[in-house]
Image (cartoon, rainbow, N blue to C red; front, side):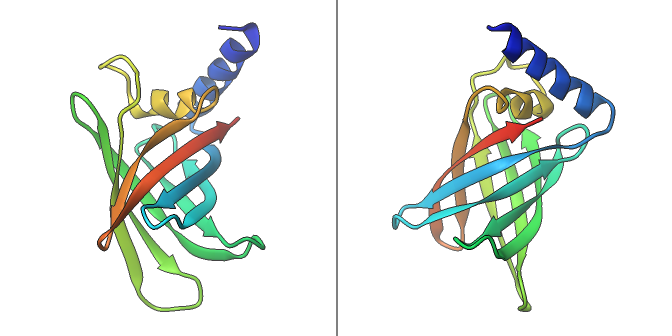
Length: 137
């Protein structure tokens, strides 16, 4: 691991430990071929956060929150979002199976997104697809 990578991971660890949030971008695709993208944040500790879906012009389409829990082999979570300018809510689930030590916490998974793309799967209302995130310090 390069010195830059080590310093980036240390900076992210310090930010999460100090109560600062980690943030980044995400992208997803549906089995139908449709593509999505937006931003996310993780609160200190990394078990909850927010996410936003943007259209191609950068306009907010959906905003919501996410949460996560850990099983021995994978991470699973739930998300909810409201549509900008409309009533109603969307919700779904997501999973991630990163290659981390079994004792690693979710903050560590988010920190790993500083150096590599973290991927997983999502489901909502009969739709499913893949997602990926990158973090920025």
